[in-house]
Amino acid sequence: MAVDGSGRLEPNGGYGAGSEGNTGVNGTTCNFEYSGALSETILLGNVAYRTGQKLEWNAKELKATNCPAAAAFIRREYRKGWEL
Image 1 (cartoon, one colour):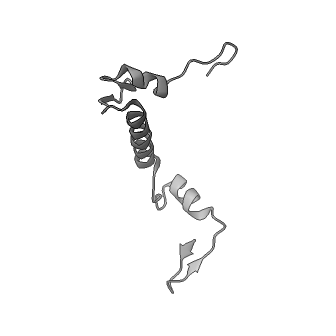
Image 2 (cartoon, one colour):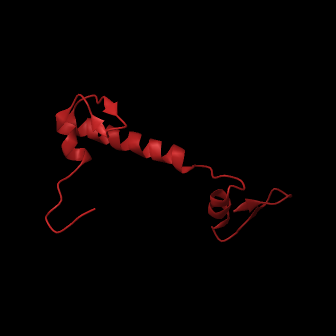
Image 3 (tube, helix red, strand yellow):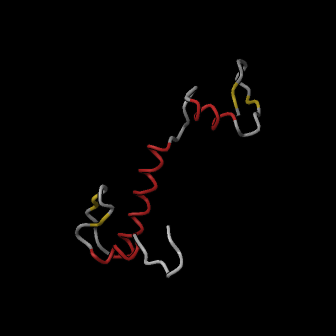
């Protein structure tokens, strides 16, 4: 939805904010730089809860440096025949 000069909301089919954000016209309200870090924080909170420990996170290596048990929740072993 977009606000016109009168302050009323006008529908744009749900595509306006995304397409304007992709082209750099107005930006988005929650860009990927922000939302990626936020998602990582929330997911790490779940890992800390499940392990019962406070995590020290190394973002470059994607590892909890003080909790080996966290690795089971961060990465998984895939069955043979499946690759990423």
